[in-house]
Length: 112
Image (cartoon, rainbow, N blue to C red):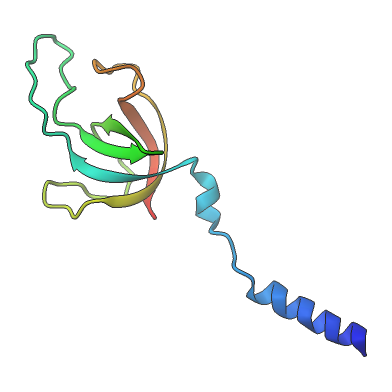
C-alpha cells in the first residue's frame, strides 16, 4: 500500500514540476536593450560607426551594437518601448573603432 502511495506521489511530482525552457539553454547571456546611444562624436576616420549604436546591458555592464541578426524577430526603433529583456549570444566586434570589448556583434537573440 505504501509503495503505491509513494509511486503516485512520484508520478504527480514528475508531471507537475516546472519544465525548463529549452530555448534558455541555447543562450549564454541575458540582458536588456535599453535604447539608442545618443552621444555625439566627430567622425574623423573612414571607420566611423561608434556613434548611434544601440545600448544593451549584460551583467550590469553596457555594451553597444549596430544591428540585430537578420533572423531576429525583435524590431528596434526610437519609438520602441525600452528596456527590452532578451536572451542572446554575442562576440566582440573585431571591426569596432570603440573601446575593446564594448562593441559587440549579436549572433543570436530572442525576447525573454
